[in-house]
Each structure stands twice: as structure tokens, then as C-alpha cells.
Length: 530
Image (cartoon, rainbow, N blue to C red):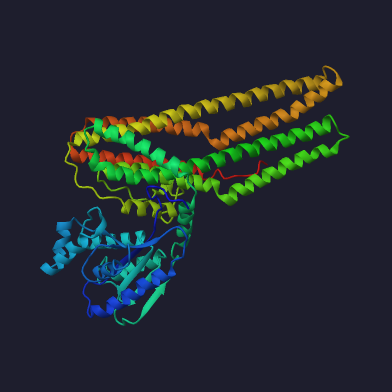
């Protein structure tokens, strides 16, 4: 695979979660057991051609097990640490009694690639239960350092292990009553299919000249918009360049498979209509030439071949996945510039058909997000960042959805008028055929029209439904209204916290719009026109 000037290959990421006791004896024996488990996890991973696999440990960095596992995983090449804090840092640090423990916490925290914080709960035990469940939900495999006994209180290791078993999370249990005993509970298994799908994405052939051209043009436009907003360009350029490479690549691939999916669908419906027309012509005009029906057979075989190829090459699912990834990169680019964390990729219940947190795109996006260049706090006035985001991000999305809504509405109306015209012509032909006006050849022509015109109208209607022009037009129109409202609110606010809340709300609205779109379009799978 040809390499792009900016490397847009996404490494696969296996997230290792940890739960365990704080007070541990003979840590040296535990370290050996943890090392053995990490090696076993690495041995279980597939060998894939164009994608590297990196280890990431997700830990709250409590004393004991959390830190032991974090240190051991970080010994692996290119590994990373993700921290999820159950409480604000200063409050959480009160749990650590000695200066040595607090120093160790700060030292590990400084190595973290990503630091998150859970919403405050009503009590400390509830907070610890919440963070333990979060680790289980977000990890690919859990390392439990546990004595096998029930938890003494809510949020204890026993409770978290029980939750991991309930959710079928793969788990290695290191029994601290017997350090030599390591038990693997496979649960739902490691997400090996994720790695294969990501490797297929990384292996897609891309015209690097076109990729670099688009990335350069978009970067120049964003640079100009940043300067107009008095935002320090050099401060944000590294984030823009990094995310743009991934965005442009995903966007090019999404467009490629969208075109393949749409064109194949259109061709299927047109070939089906043509097959009906050929059969009608042969029966009505040249019944003595049955070999003409070979053309009908060829058209139907072509339909089968196109549907088969579309499903085998996964044009439809690739379009959806790559578009989802592109839109996540688009929002992430502006959130990275703002030093704001992204929304957790877990769809709400009413959009749960959109994707699963175990899908490869979620892993791929997290891998890219965690590898982004970290920025220092922007010294420019909040108004500079506000003006940049309102124009370069929200403004561009408003313009895109407005244009998309109008384009889809025009196409819907054109195809609807074409269907209505064909229906009218069919009705006229049927009436004339019934009253038998004109010579016999004209009656035959009318008979052909009665058969062929409805077939053509049906094909046009199928294309209109297949592309969902009306729904997409209305969805984009709604998004224009929502985004304009958010843009107006953002432009009026001078409060820093209120501004960042609006930025997070904007990103969430864009994410939910993408999720809603996926729920609808994912069921428009290629089908035979029968």
C-alpha cells in the first residue's frame, strides 16, 4: 500500500482494563503474573498485514492492582495509558495516605494519553462502583487481581468481577490467594473481527496526490479562517494537520463506496425494467424470434451479479462505516483545537441500532483521538476560538446541510414527477388499448407501453426510495435549524464554561444526527428487484 505524505494508517488498539485490591503483599510475584497475562493477551491477537496493534491500559490509578497493571502494560512498545478518575483529582488524591503514594499517582498520571472524569455520584462507594463498571464497559479484556471473595462493600473487586461476568467481558483472573493460578474466562472473546475490518480500511488504495491536494486545500482554508478569528495559527496547526489527514482519507473512501452503492442500485432497477421491456417486445412484436429473450436472461444475470458483488465487496456497509468515521474526525478536529474531550461513542437507547461500542470504527476513532498532539491552553481570548468554531465548523455544516437539503429535494421532486408522468402515460395507453383505436401495430405498441411504462415507473420509484431523497432533505433542513440556533447562542456567550458546554452540545447533536442517519440507511441493503 502506498504511504501518504501524512501517515493516515490507524493502529488497532486493545484496551486492557483492571480491577483489583489495593492492599497487596508480595508485589514481585504479582508483577510476574501480570507480565505473563500481558504476554498471553499479545499472543492472542491476530497477525494483520497493514495495521499495527498497540496495547492501552484503562485504569483509575488507585493504589495496588491498578498501578501494577498500568506499569506492566506500559512496558510494551508503543503502549499507552488512559486514566478515568472517579472524582476530581484533588478530591481523589485524599484516598492516598502517604506522600509516596501521591507522588506515584502524579507520576503515572503524567504519562496518561487521555484523562477522563466521571460525573460526581452521591457517595464514595457509589463512585468507585461506577468507575469499576466504566472500566469493564470500555475495555476489551479485563485483568482482575482478586482473592475470589465477595466484596465487602459496593464497588469492591468482587462486585466488579461479577459485573464483568454478567456482561461477558473477557477476563484474566489472577488469584492473590495463589499467585501461580491464572484463570482465563473468554466471555464474548477478544474483538478480532475489529482488527480485520480496520486492516481492510488501512489497506484501501488511495490516490495520495488527491488526498494531499484535498488536505492542503482544506488546511489553507482553515488557516485563513483561524487568522480571521485572531486565533494563533501555529498553536492549532498540528491538531488540524493530524486530524485532516484522517478526515480526508475517510471522506474519499466514503464517497467511493457511496458512488458504487448508488450506481449499482440504479443499474439493478434499470436492468430489471429493461428485462421486462425486452420480454414484452419479443412477445408482442416478434414472437417467432424467441432467441431475443437471451437479452432478458443476460439482464437478469447481470442484476444477480451486481447484487452479489455489492454484498461480497460490502459497498453498502463500507460506505456507512467510512462516512461515520469521517464525520467523527470532522468534529474531533475542532474539539482537539479547543482542548475538549469527545463524546463517548455509546449511542443512546433509541439509536442503539446505529452501531455498537464494539464496532471497529469506535476502536479506530479512539485510537486516532488518543494519538492526537496535545495542546497547551490557548492564550487567545475566548472570542477568537468562538469565531473560528462558529464559522469553520458550525458555519460549514450549516452550509453543507442547506445545500444537501435543497439538492435532495430537487432530485426527489424530479423523480416524483417522472413517476407521475409515466403513470399518466400508462393510464392513457391502457384506455386506448381497451377501446382498440388505430391499426393493429398501434395496438401492439400500446400493449408494450402498458407493460414497459409501469416497469420503468417502478424502477424510478425504487431509485427514489433507495436513495431516500425526501427523508434526507427533511433531516438536513432540520439540522440547519438546530445548528443555526446553537451558532446564535454561541456567538452571544462571553462565559467560558457556557461556551464549552455549547461546543459539547453541538458535537453531540452532530453525532446523534449521524447515528439517526445510520439507523435508516443501514437497512437499505442491496436486494433483488422482485
